[in-house]
Image (cartoon, rainbow over all chains, first blue to last red; front, side):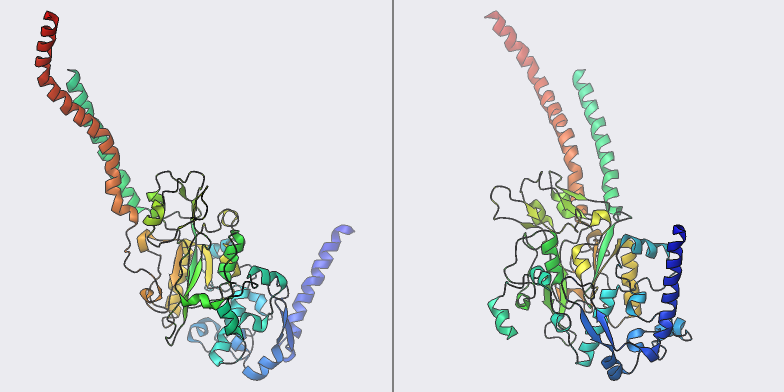
Length: 172
Length: 302
């Protein structure tokens, strides 16, 4: 019965995706997460999740209303005062990779009632969250290559071989 | 009799043209861009001055290599403007202010009613339904009227190309991306999502919503919503816009409004003046006609 194969496979996938977030509750948060896994201009890198948990101690600082202490922001409280922790807490669970694709734009147009029409894409959300907090706290990397070293393709893209005398001095 | 008919036709023709001109003239003022036009909202409060948009534009539009790499921050020491080798540049402002520095990306703003298009007498410019102002180098004669007309000083001219000098500016990646629904290369690369791509009408709502939700973060104005009849590129800022290099004296009237009265006169002048002056000429010639007949008869006598 070859026609049933995709169905069974799909069902398996569904059950996996349903059971995985249950296991990944606050208790079993990953210690390390590979970010920028499909990066072309910048290399993938390990994000030290455990260290951030130790330093920040508040999951909702990054995870909004999905896990940790519930939100206190007066604007968010309007809807999320009593919302319970969600099954999906990872960034990419809500923030899409393709925020400006024709499909994403059409979806936004169709759902005029939705409040979160201005939801960031994955890349924007992560950079703003990381750099924003690091700048505010005066701790943690803020430069591009401090987190993810450039790949060879990235070097060519930014014409990094064209070094000005001034910037060379500044860099050292 | 012939003269009378001629003058009558002139008056009727002139009246028709002036009526037609009026309707056309008013229509230009109420035009608010194409309903499906796309745009980009630049949130200058998010920009970190990484210059990735400049690099992406350089590669997407196959522009010449830059003088220094795109990670070189010494370029911020002076205020730059787009040219034929860089369709977009990022400048740094408010360097020593407590909230600063502030970075602002400049490129063609893709006006709803582009002055470059109005000024071009060979129709090299087109405003597409997607909102992009594109340029056809094949018909361009290199007069550079568009460079003078542009209120934002955007179009650049490739002076170094002697044989085929062409005007160069941002085309919103029309050929390679916008046409197929993809965002421009600069938007795609922006790590901070300082650039938001979408339908222009939606972006205006979104911009005002950002101001409403964070009144401390934003100056209460969306630059490009109404300036010069509106532009496809819209800007949000923390400070008043004149502090970060924007011209805030441009007003909301599109450039074409300043010249449409004059432009409307052109067909009238072209059609009425020849007729009018021919008429006057004929009238004055009429007085001479008697003399003419006289001389003619005299000539016959000889």
